[in-house]
Length: 168
Image 1 (cartoon, rainbow, N blue to C red):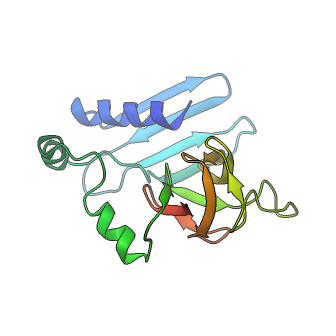
Image 2 (image 1 turned 120 degrees about the horizontal axis):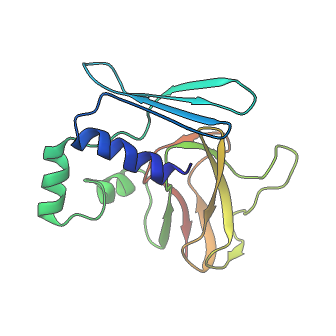
C-alpha cells in the first residue's frame, strides 16, 4: 500500500467521521485510529510479524484550513515562500521534500552520495532517498542543471515541502 492510498483512507475517515479502520492484504495489516484529543496513530504489521506503531506524520488538515486553501487557490502550503527565504534559499530551482521522513544522500552508508555540490543533473535523476515508514522513496530532480546547494544533512529528518536542493 502506498502513502497516497493511506492518505486517501485518512481523508475518507475524516469526511465520514470514522474513528477506526483496519485493513489486511497478504502479510500487510494496516490499522488507523483517530478521535478525542489523542494524536492519530498508524499501526503496521510487517511480514516478519513485527508491529510498527508511529504517530501519523501525515494528518488530514482541518476542514476550515482545507476550505480556506481551496478558496484562496493556494497550491503550496501557506508561507512556503517565506520559509524558503528564512532558510536562506535564494535563486535557482528548489527541489522540495515530497513527504515527511529521514533524508539519506546515498543508497547505503558505505556508498558515495548520489550528488554533490557542482554536479550536473538531469530531470528525473535520483538526488537522494527519504525513508518514511520503513519505505525508501527516491527523490528525483524536477529540473536539469547544476547542484548549487544541498540544504539538508545526511540522516536529517525532513518535513513535507522542505527545500532539499538548489539547482541553477
